[in-house]
Image (cartoon, rainbow over all chains, first blue to last red; front, side):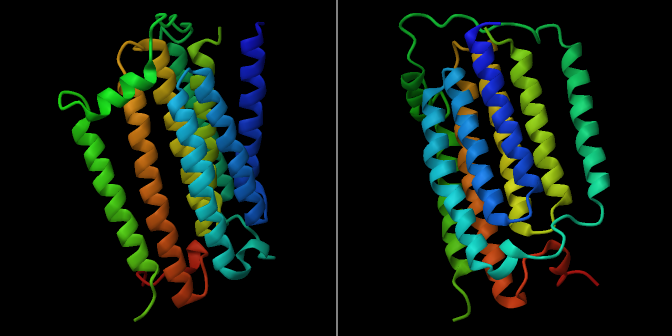
Length: 169
Length: 102
């Protein structure tokens, strides 16, 4: 085993463990903190995949903005964080079966694929993924339309969110 | 080097964990956290397939960026809805939000 593989296994195990805590702990504030840990692990995996921009975006958007939003909502919605009742609904066993079955099915389908054990090709020496990504996002022959659509969607969603949460006038 | 299969099996496990959270949790905010885990698993798959199969293009990273933007929009609207529902019904438990059920 190489150092990279050991690092990958450590980060992946930490991320999966945090994800299990997110879906199983009773206290919602703790669940949100475990979510931050899981998102941080995913940011590290992006670094392993040499996607530096996405790692930074993950930290800024997910850890910085989305989890703060989630914690705000937990605190604005009263006692839900310390709800004494059960945090799982009555059909959680069925949910567990569905989730495990989906995972097994996924692994079975993946194992059929001939290129699944491929290792990563070496990137060229002058390769600059960040520059390529920036150019692709504003290139009319590239991805400028999906990019602009995502911007408009985000603006509309934020205006809608303010309007919904405003309360009765 | 880490083979592609490790990333994809990890992403499958993360997706299933998120799916369990969405199906089993009672609290609407916790359901939203499960959705976040699922979206992140998809992002890992997108970036891993970009890195292992088409690193000369950039499409995988572009899609991951757009998934992040859509996830941010979804969280903003979802949490605003929960705050609005909480203000009227004093609950965010998904089973008790049954205004449209009869």
